[in-house]
Image 1: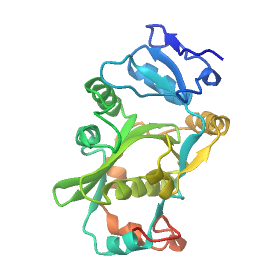
Image 2: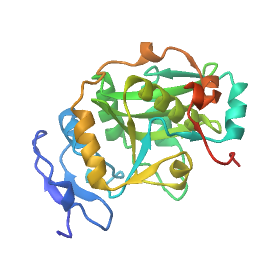
Image 3: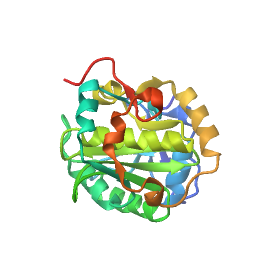
Length: 260
């Protein structure tokens, strides 16, 4: 195995190297260079690859092993949090504030992380993908205030999550759970969450070997998708519905222990 990532040629339709060539340290680094054109981004995601780099670095492309995944019927919310949602007046919408969501994700402080990987170049690229119907956001509003959100890329029946944020405690949980609820209803079984952390694992994320992940991606991205805004499909959806009993098909699974 090479100890250096591959250098991508400038052509947007140039193929990526096989993901099996990704480095072990740092885990999953596969290639550098290229651009963030829609053509290259769609090709990357279809092969289980995503861009992740900081300001001042070349574009870096990753395919870590294992991969962090959510089943869309497996997002867990603690019982205490679910009880609080029964009284919530928060409202979920989709694709009504994409630029605000990605901007908030870029500006949100992350523990142990200086700065942001969502550079101006990344923001412009994903906003272009949103305009083309490939990138989507789920937004949580408290009246007219955006209190949480998540965004990512949909190809076929596969959703690739990119980032989420909370302006108020619990905002990102609601965004993720609402996204999973609707995706499951639409026949999307999985959400890619890329790289593990304790928060994602507490919400029900699982670690998949890369080979298993790539098999699912190949199957799901080949299916017919929804390349259009999701605004009307979601409407103005009350977050309180997430407090419903999972046995009745009204909400996500409940965690074994309540939120702290």
